[in-house]
Amino acid sequence: MPYVFSLLVLVGMVFAVVDIILRDEGQVRHLPKIVWLFLVILLPLLGTILWFAIGREYAERQAPRPPQFAPWASEPAPPATAPRDTRTIEQQLADLEREIEEDRLRAEIARRRAQQQGTAD
Image 1 (cartoon, helix red, strand yellow):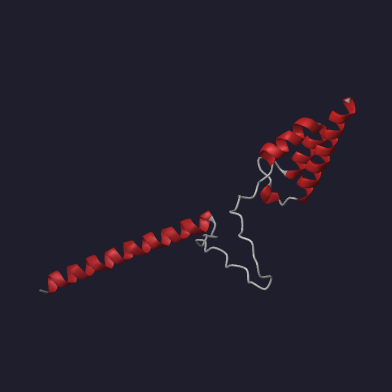
Image 2 (image 1 turned 90 degrees about the vertical axis):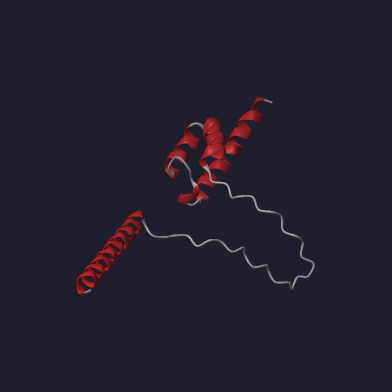
């Protein structure tokens, strides 16, 4: 009986190590993958529990798909998502500064035109 707990901890540790190795770096939270590996190997019970509780990124649950009755039916189109801005923060700030400068220049041109029309009358 005492071996059952040890065996469960060992199996959990193996699953955690394999899961850590197979995950992309973007799916690992709070610590780098190598630190998670050391944590799970050095502290098998605590490391495994922490990995599955806070270390890995879980996929969002999706609504279950309705069963398809015809094998030749095509897959439904994926839902439309809003386009994501892939620019860096520096690029966004530079674009914002250009827009501010453009607005300032337009205001200056409008002010000068108003002055010219005022003196021409």
